[in-house]
Image (cartoon, rainbow, N blue to C red; front, side, top):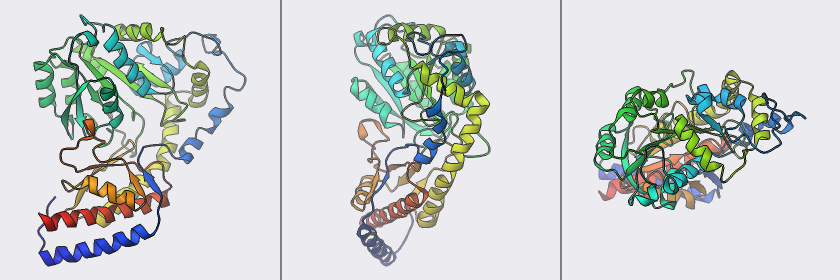
Length: 423
């Protein structure tokens, strides 16, 4: 990322960056690029959900959705999402509104009850370790911190986590109980796992018999191009490799319909589904089936989901295009930064000069542009290179996003040219 410039040339570039920053700070902006929330216009696409189910209160099998029961969720909703999530409908649970909640519960249940294939609870086995591909999702890391689970960073490649590192770590240490994966349009890099990566995850030898892949397929239907990325079927690969219980799959409609009132899904082997259902029966007598019925009536079928996501794409793609356009215009060829061009998902990863991310985020905040904290993409908030910044283009209006991105590039130039002059 380094370029060779004379001291005079660098001084001139730094002087311009300082003037640009002074002008930026004087504008009194209040812009937020912190989290990948759907914009109001995206939520409006699902407005008809609020009018449903229109007096209807029975599921396809005649069950009264207003009443208790139905721990697995409505069969017709599971049928709609089975193909998209690559889980047979009979092995898919439809739950409440939060897949993060399901991940939380799976960790708690694994700590406090015996997983299929395990000899004891995780809580009784001493040290518990998770592998964390980086850059990764801060809420995954927060769950591990909450429960005292040790985290080991694993580098991401263009095909997914570095499988040589993963295979070595899982084979040598029985304390390694799991790995976090966002397999399609990863948060925040946009990487999608190759077929070979999926196959190696499914068949690798693990020292822990109760090892689990936490497969957070949050962006299964969230495409930004005309050529949707397809990933291999992890659950089928695990079964074919003789490890049918290895995968916990998660998904939700949180960025499809209403972020705060969607439906979350869990898929796995029959043994794991029975394990989770039995444990969840102690905390709930059934999910919100009325909301699930709303989703059935609104989305109708798998093709309905795809059509709805094309309308989402029409709102999101111009924002992602604006991010790319501004980064290239302001930082292209400078040697100050590199960035991803995702084919789907909700984020763009900006890699600035080593040692500059925290400074860029601080200066942006002082100028009224709030970003996700530097380090959030790594376990314990510690990015050893201090270089990774996550950009979330979805929530601001296009005009606000363009202002924020132009301001961010000013901060990158200021921090980067200062770094160049001092090294």
